[in-house]
Amino acid sequence: MTTHVWDYLAEYAAEKADILDAVQKVFGSGRLVLGESVRGFEAEYASYLGVSHCVGVDNGTNAVKLALEAVGVGPGDEVITVSNTAAPTVVAIDGTGATPVFVDVRAEDYLMDTDLVAAAVTPRTKAIVPVHLYGQCVDMAPLEALAAEHGLTIVEDCAQAHGARRNGRLAGTMGRAAAFSFYPTKVLGAYGDGGAVVTDDPDVDRALRRLRYYGMEDVYYVEQTPGHNSRLDEVQAEILRRKLGRLDTYIARRQAIADRYAEGLGDLCGPGGLELPAVTDGNDHVYYVYVVRHPRRDDIIRTLRERFDISLNISYPWPVHTMRGFAHLGVAQGSLPVTEALAEQIFSLPMYPSLSEGLQDKVIAALRDVLRTL
Image (cartoon, rainbow, N blue to C red; front, side, top):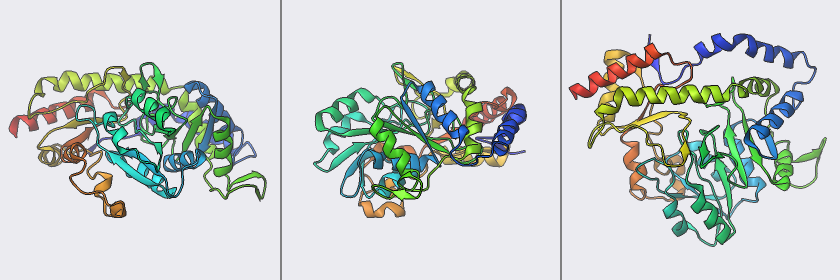
């Protein structure tokens, strides 16, 4: 049987009764769209984060897009972000009509290099989208100072950082708005697509509720600008309510798995060898994915697949600025050297709360064997 980077079946077997009860509750409620389950999840997730407002939307991509639109980003604006991210971050920025502007990431933790952001600010810059990547937070203090100096808005991309903290502050509480994805693989994952935007700003909250519902405040009447059909589904919301109560348990399990990887592979690290995830001082890492680095990444992945039936993932093999679909941005290859180097060397080991110790030991042993024979 193939070993994959992510699998939900063992978790579903353990939580099946609760998940099916959530589905039955919605189906028997008499309200299938924007009902009690969405309202309940919004209130409970806002409470978990300690923010005033949470607006459930249909996916994480639209969470970023609607958050940017709600804070006033649009055509002619520039938004600073990174290229070492999932394409949806940039798809969302591009979808507002704004221009994504990239800065490089740091070699030590693969997160936005905040020292480079000031030089990227122009008179057209409207917002900064830091991506809390792989499960830990960007250093937000320099961005907050820069945003205050230039009148910029910070919209956090927290799709990979549910429950992560930076100096005690939760991801999603450090900008004017923050976007979350609840895609099934996420630290807090639904059984389908889902997303949310959180904010302490009541004006942003009101704008988001209009934008996710065609631009309507009253039924059938668009008062200001047209919006979208981007509502969080009732069934997914009710499942998320149940799983939210287990989120801290999921995180603790991910951290325990990360500790076992460090214990089992740490002696293989060194110059030119395997690099394990570095946890930045002040961060609580929740390990959405467990990303390692090696100069012979492709050989390792191929050998693990052929000899051990272990199928690993690369997050991400193509920096966004190198994709043909973003050629219109005119960003030259070679302009983001750290990002481009990482794309040649990083790969992800299996990481999910129901990963058994036996399966993890298999991965560790196989990887050790491959590294010894390179």
